[in-house]
Structures are given as structure tokens and as C-alpha cells.
Length: 528
Image 1 (cartoon, rainbow, N blue to C red):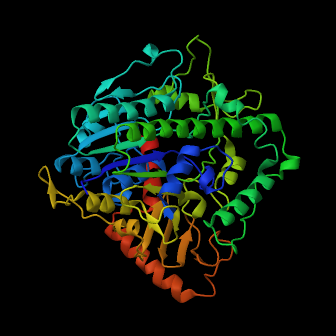
Image 2: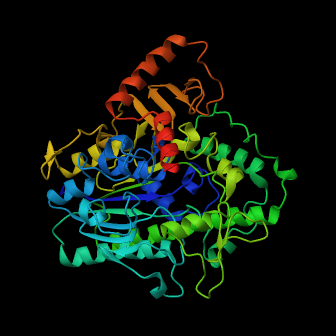
Image 3: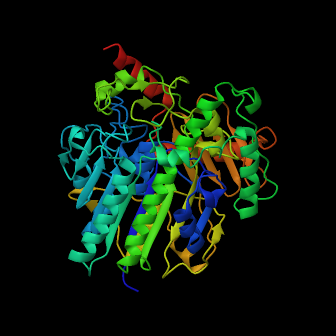
């Protein structure tokens, strides 16, 4: 078998159970096809936030080791600089040196400076070609920080029917076409990083209309139905209990502004639907050019569903950072903030879908993006490779995380990991390859670790020790209690002590800066 092409498709702020093949209501026939022809992971984990997940995915390290422990903000001289440092190397850099052509289409969000060319932009980190945005979020109809290679694209020059998700998909398909024409004998690596369904809720009206009435039963009934489908699919065990509805929320029957709330979820679903359509276009291109069979394709999300509520003050940040237009093409002010008098979807709105729908997205788990309880870090994960994967349609139940992707890609591509790159000593990868899973092997994974904004966790086999920032450790038996309902910390103080010691050793070795220190730095910066 020749070296495979490798495609990683990452989407943004999508919950565990939104797509069809993970029990959701959103129509995702193309992802469902990949799942049926590949394997799904029931316990694959990201790192709970956009930038850190991207850093970990691309480098095989924990985000703290890469310089991006929180986001791409500079947290002071003793904190995380918010840039990929020179002690890490990306999949693209390694495969490029190994003879692969490398392409990226979509969101970067790994550079502190998004306006002046520097060593942390995609072309400087191993990609031969790049089309996409450098910022973390913005308009889907007129994205700012849009680039082609290292050249900025003026948003005012985009066509009237421009939609960023469609553009990401079209460029990814075009990269495949061009590669096949110019480099038919070379493998390629491509990173397709959608912003969908990250806020703002921007979607095409024809996609939104498909979901009219789809969510009318409300979040309570839909959470129960999703859990039932997850069980019937074999993704979640029959014994799994549904986590309680977020305590800040009313039951659906008592919710106000139902028309607005439903429109929020319909627009969110439409964002995912458009992405799936684009993935279908990419897969069709691979099939038509004869490259699908020997392409290893991964799909996953960078964190769990996002419960962030957009405030009107978001306009100030968008203007200051230059990441989103504050006026529409026809000069009207964009309405920033979750205002129930403004229906989401169009260019003139800038909203999120809120806590209640994020609670649905993360069914059956609790909590959200930012936290390292299951709702923040559990992601759908699909691996598809027709020439290699034998047990098509199977579900892998052993836990894995982002650091494991790079070692897997290096193994299947026959690429080694060097001690140094461009004169800089490298930190060794933290992950383990799961490539033999493609042959039907059953693997056990060593301890998994997380930290984000003081939220922390370690998992060893079926035991997970987890806490919110500044709160006590909680202990869960993940075989019996995946939804983290029954805290066993008091019953098993020996496990708490053992696992917390493992966590402390990991945090020290990987450069995790205590949250209190980061908050102190931020406070001092605000007074300067």
C-alpha cells in the first residue's frame, strides 16, 4: 500500500450528539456515510477550547507545551504567549519534510498577531497553501482576517452570495483537484478547519428552513430522545443515565420567547448542515479523482457545545481586534447580542444559541466548552480509510485524545519525529498511536490529562478525577457513570490521592501555569 493521503476535518463548538451518526437531529448524510464506512469513537476527547485543541491536534503535545495554554492572547511575560512556539512542530511541517504536499482551508486561530505576517501563520508552520481566517470567530458572510496564503483578502470584494463554510469546502475540493493534476504521484495532507457551528448564528435561509419544526418538542424531550438514539446506536451503554437539565434553565413548557429560541437552534443546525454538504463535495472530489480509497480521513470537534451568551458589548471587541464587521454590506448596524427581538441567521445579527441548546448539544453529558467534565471535552470522532479499516461501522470504546492524532498520522505515513527542527530542540510527543485500531486490534491507553482555565482532570482506565477551578476534586467510575452523576471522591480517597498526584506531576512537567497566577497577570495588565 502506498502512503495514504491524510485529511483532518475539524469543526468548531459542536456538541457530542448533534450529528446524525451520534444521535442528533441534524441531517448529516455525508458524515453518516463516513461513519458507516469507517469507525466511530465513543470516548474521544478534545481539550475544551478552540485554540488549545488546535494546538494539541496539530502538534501531538498538550497545549501548555506549545505556548497556547488558554487562547491566542498574550498572558504576560510569565504566562502563555498565545503563539505556537519553536519547541513544537506541526503535522504539516513533519509531513512536508517527508515528501507530502500540505494544504489548509479554514480557521487557524494559533497566532497572537493576526494582522502582520509572522512565524506562527500557516505557511510558516508547514502548509504549502492556505485559504482561511486567522481569527477565532467572525462573520460568515464577510469574514475578516481572510487570507490566501500570506495575502489578506478584502472582505468588501467578496461576492454577494459569499458564505464562509461553502468557501472552505470549495477550496478544500479545489486543492484536491489541483493536487491530482500537478502532483499525481505525491501524497497530500490537508487540514480542513470549519468555523461552523461557532457563533455568530449565520446561516443561509434555505438551510434554516429545512429545520422549521424540527426542534419544536423542546430541549427536555429532545435530550431524552437523543439519549435513546445514542443507546440504540451502541455509542452509549444502556445503563447510562441522562444528566439533569442545567439548573439555570426552565423546563421547555415554561420557556419564554419560543419562536426566537427555536430559530436559534434552527440556524445552528443549518450551520452544521452546510458543513456536511461541503464535506460531501470534498468526498465526491476524492472519489472522482480516485483518491478516496487511500485517504485517511478524520472528523472531530474542537470542544463541546458552547453555552456562551453574546452581549451587546461584543461590538467593542470586534472593532478593537478587527475580527468582525459592525455594519452590513448595505451600511446597517449589525445587532450584537442575544436579543429575542432580532431573529438570528442573517448578516445583520451576531448571536449565539445559548445555554439551553448547548445543554441539548452535549446530551447526555453536563457542562460545556471551557470545562473538562464530559460536556466540555467529549467529541464525535470518525476515522475513514477504505483500504485499511477492516471493521467498517464499528465503534471504539477505549478513551483517546487529541495528542494521539499526530503519532497515528506519523505511523501510517512512515514519518519520523525528529529531536530538533530548524535548529530548535523539540518536546517529544505526548500521545500514543491508535493506528492498529484500523486493523481491528483492541488497545489500552495510558493516563489522559486536561487543564483549561483551572478546570482540571486526569483519567486512568475507568476512573476520572475532575474538578472545576477552585473547587474540590470529583471522582467518577466512567464505566458505570459516564455522565458524571455520582461523585465517589469521599468513598475512594486513595484513588483521589493517587490520581491527583499523577495530575500534579503531569502539570509540572507540561508547564501548566496555575490559574491564580494567570488571573494575577491579567489583573496587573488591566491596571497598566
